[in-house]
Image 1 (cartoon, rainbow, N blue to C red):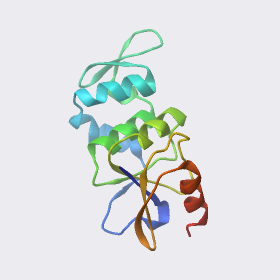
Image 2 (image 1 turned 90 degrees about the vertical axis):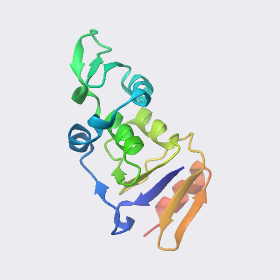
Image 3 (image 1 turned 30 degrees about the vertical axis):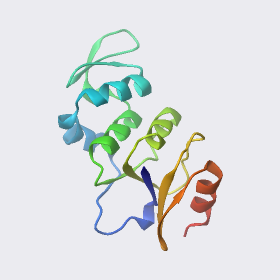
Amino acid sequence: MITVYRLNSVPDDMETVTLNDVFFNRSTSEKLDDRASEIISKIDDAEMISKYMIRSRFDESVLNIDKLSTGCKTVLNIMYNPEKVFDIRECGENAIDAIYSLGSGNICCPYPLISFDVGKVKVHDKNGVREVDSYEELKEWWMNEN
């Protein structure tokens, strides 16, 4: 289950990553396995042909994995680094949907970015951690959290 933080409420003992593109290129790309293929296909409509190469959807050219979109890289960062908190503000709608469907991970943003298909998530605020299970409830929490 995804845990959602407001950007200013991430615990001090957790690392927050705001530069997802750089973090992916320096760290997460080394961790990729077969699980990454589905995400790359779903978000960027590209084919993972090896650990470091993708086939582009545009002209089927072979590109380095660092050419993935920032949204795709963010989803992969969350998947492969569950102990860190990732800022999702650079993600498009398809990446946001994928993030909220992940089984675990930590996200933050200074404003609400919520999938309409959100299921059950944990929210972390000044009162601790609790579960919410609807778009409306998550939106209300986000708008009222200081």
